Length: 84
Figure 1 (cartoon, rainbow, N blue to C red):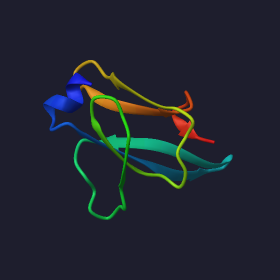
Figure 2: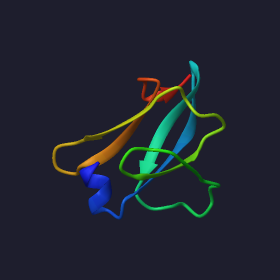
Figure 3: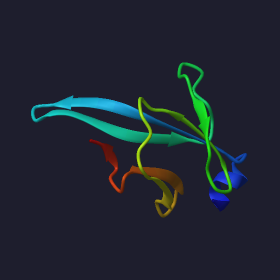
């Protein structure tokens, strides 16, 4: 990923839990900088250094770039933006 490479070549992925009237949702978050409060582990990835703080790894963790002005990296767990 070119954007990750430009920002140092490392991508950190974790889940964030939110609660709502319909229950709990876990959303994937990403950053090119480590959050020292988390326990990241390195996993194999093509072309970048990928670190995750997830209870379990998905079958597929897809990463893409979104946003028009402020380009950001997004992660998808088995094709979804939230963890099931």
